Length: 551
Ligand code: PEP
Ligand code: MG
Image 1 (tube, helix red, strand yellow):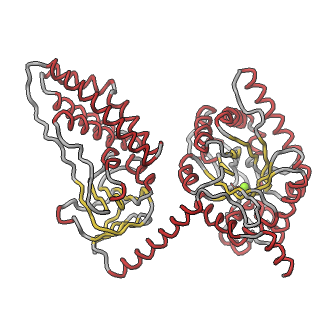
Image 2 (cartoon, rainbow, N blue to C red):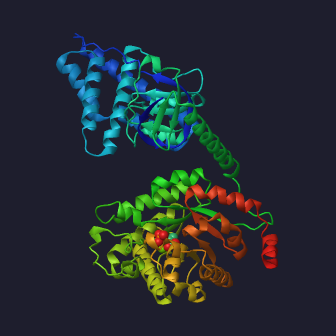
Image 3 (spheres, rainbow, N blue to C red):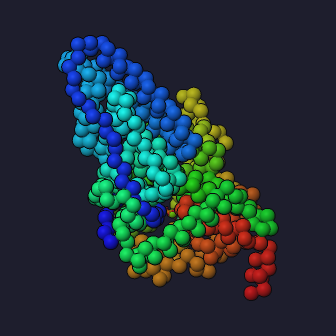
């Protein structure tokens, strides 16, 4: 057995035979020509044909992978007509009096090296794109085949690097996994692998020798390993993993499009907690009913400066549009405590969990708050957006927030900027004070979302970050259960919706209890949605309540 280590870009297990993919690179010679105008015309014709081919690839990818998998080919169509690239090819043809293929090859090499040398990983990943387009133009100019992978049976494809064109031209049913020696995490091949739902590992130093073809191998797209000719015990263990994974996927297929409704007809929304755009794919894949908690502080945590209104708006809009009408609850930033950001310049605190955090920062830093409120309101025109405020402890705070929101709305009106006037406002119930004031708070807002992580910490006076206190941090504590009941009852007395977005919402041992308490929504990590949906579908709430009474 030989083991090769790489980086995971798409998770999963694959077991099968190896297929070494090598590119048929067209041979390009430098030929001095007399008629440079003819070469320029050949180049123009090759560009036209390349765009035509890319349109066809876009359609194929769109049919098989959807918009996200296809959009690279729309971008390629634009890149074929990149002004700098064209200018360079033309200049080489004209100044050196050479053939079009040589000029394209030299330009492609030069541009690929240029992007490869850039500092940001994102741009380095674009090297493959430049080579892909250049290869396509050269294939057309030299009349070489397009070089797609067409193995006869399902295989693990190993290659130096795969261009998006090659990936899309492959017969999807014939590919178990992709393993490449090069490539970047952001490469479109990585994105395509994720969209196709097959494991992929990059940066794996596997030899691309002819005699590797047909060898049995295992790709562990969790650990980022390729096992060639695996030992029998390892093979058995990985086969077990693969069976479990297949079961999970089957369950997902069965449950994905189903409504979350109990046997006796009680509905509950199962939504996703997200931290940014990167979680949207999993949100959709797991059939979320919406986004119940968008922790926007991640935008701030990942930035080196305050994200501008425009930057935030672009992201919120994209989330709202992707969810296409399903609700997206955007929580205003919740930093402080365990989430510290240097550029905020917050004072050092003795006890940050009880310090300047979340809504307290927003109320003391209006510049930060206003930019975020404007961005959220503007994005509300692009889907169903709601706003959620964290760490509320009093009715006065909510009144202040509502006043600020109303001011921002007036400002947008004055500027003629559209927003959803009926946007719902909600508060997090994550402090004991908010629980005790649930009735009063319910009169002020459209929904509650219970943050059991903080509620447990503040109720039991146990730091949620302190691992040595783990045995005392008990979200199942009767005090928490009682509070959850109180909050649900208060919400329903006032006719507003109530959900749980803390980790406890994902605890399958409590799903029936949450249904019995009447919770309208559970918002959890995307991967936890479908197991919960299974429980919901199997539950008879009335029956469960009777059982509980008997106990
Ligand atoms: C919570 O406190 O339960 C919650 C959802 O918020 P966060 O974990 O982001 O503090
Ligand atoms: Mg919290």
